[in-house]
Image 1 (cartoon, chains in turn purple, orange):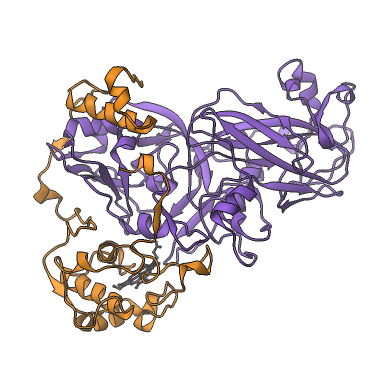
Image 2: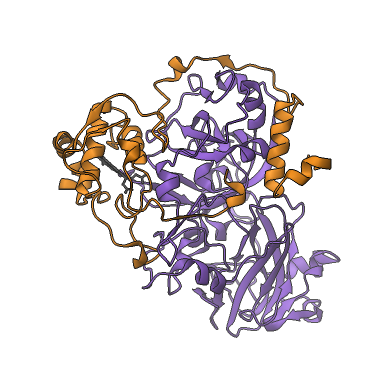
Length: 439
Length: 188
C-alpha cells in the first residue's frame, strides 16, 4: 500500500501532539474504516492501480501441506541475524527481527538465542533435573515425571542483560531494531512452578540462594535468591505450546520472569540449594557492568522498564506523506505496562499510545499511535510507565549514572556495557528514510 | 497470592522481603503451595558427585589435590595457548594476563587481574568449561596447577605458592572490593 492513500475521514482526525501525532482513540471507536486507511511499511515502490487477472497460483492446485509448517518462501528475509554462524569457539548470538514482526509474541524460530558454546543435542529420555544441596531429600526428576506435575502457562519476555548495549555508544550506532534490540523476545511458557519441586525436596530454612546449572558443555551456572525461586520461578517445558526449541533450553530451562536472560538457565540439569552466591563466571565477571568511577554493578537481576518503536524504524522507509501507524514494544521486569507516550518532535510534545489488550505482567505489550506524516523531518521516540510506578529513564539520566563510551562504537554487535533501558530515537528524513539518532 | 497480614507484615522490610518471609513461613509451617504428585526419585550426594562441580567463594566444593604455577605452565602451553596465546597473552580468545584500570572506561576489557573478585571462580570456570573443546577432562591437580599459573602470571600469587582447597580461597583478588550490589533489597 502506498503512503498517500486517503479516506474521507483522515483529514478530520484530531492532532494531539506535534508533527502530526493523532488521537489513539481512533483505534477504539469506529476504527475499522480508519484502519483501512492506515498504511503499512514497505520496502518496495507503490504499485499503480491495474487490471486484476488470475495469477498462476489461482489456476492450479496448491502444494501439499507439510507436516511441520514453515513461513511462505516470500518471507525468507524474516530471519534472525547470526553473530557466529560457523560456531567458532566463542559465543553465538541470534537476534529477533523486531522490525519485521508485530503483535506481542515471538515465533519460536525467531526467538533470540545466546549460546556460549552452541546448542547441546539433548536426548530428553536421559536428561535429568537434580535438586540437591541444603534440602531434606535430594531428588532427581525425569522429563516424563515433570510432565505429570501441575502446570502453569504465562506470557513472559526474556531479555539478555546486554540487549540494547550499542546505546551506550557516545555516537548513535546505525542499525535496525533487530541489531540494536534483538536480544529480547516474548513467548508463552508452560511448565512446573519451581516452588513445587523445592517443597517436595524440603529446603533447609538456612538456604538463601540456589545455583542453577545447564547441561551444555560450559555447564553455564548462575546463583538465584530463593525469594525469586519461591515467587514466580518456573521449570519451563513448553514454548508457545510446543516443546522448548534447542536454542531456548530443550528439554527444560529455568524461567525467572523479568530477570536477566542469562539467569534463566537453559538445558537445566541441576539446582543446588546453598547459603551464599557461587560467584560464577557469568555473574561475577560477564554480567557485571562497569561504572564510570571504576566500580562495577553486581547482581543486576532485573530487566527494567523499556520501550522502543519498531514501526517505523531503520530499514522500514516511509513511502510518502500520509497516515501511518507508529507501533512498538514496551515491557517491564516489574510488572504490567501502564502507559506509553510517543513523541514525533523529539520530545517537545507527547501523545498517549493505545495498548494492545490483554496487558500481561512482565511481557511484551504492543503500543500504537496513528500519525499523519507531512513529509518534513521528524524524530520519533517512545517512553513507558509500569504499574509499579517505574518510568523509563531518559538516555541522559542513564548516561549520568552509567556513563557512555569515550569514542564512538562502530560495531553494532559490541557490548560496551549492559542493561540500557532508556529510549531509542528514530529520525525520519524528508525522503522517508529512518536513522538512529540521540534526542 | 500475597497476604501481608498482622505482625508478619511489620517485620518485612520491603515487598520482596515480605514475599520471601511469607514463602518461608508457608514452607516451614507446612502450609501447602502448589502440591506436586511427588515423582522425584531420591538420589544420594554420591550419585550426584560427577555433576556437583560448584565451587563457592569460601572454598566449599573444592576437591582434594594441589598444583603450582611451574606445574601449570606446560599444561597451559599444551592445552590452552592455542586459543589464549603463549603465556596467556591473548590469541583468538581472551588474554588471561594484564588489564587496564577499570577507570579507563565503561567498556574496559575485563580480565582476571582487573575484575575477577574471587580466585575460586577461576578454579570453578577452568574446571567446568576449559579447555573449551574438551571441558571437564582436566584432573583436579591440573586445574589447581593452571589456576596457580594464571594467578602467578598476573602477579597475584608467587610462582612457588601451592594452590589447594585451603590456600585458594585465601587468595585476595585485586578487585575484590570493586563491586556495588545493584538491587540490595533482592540480594540475600
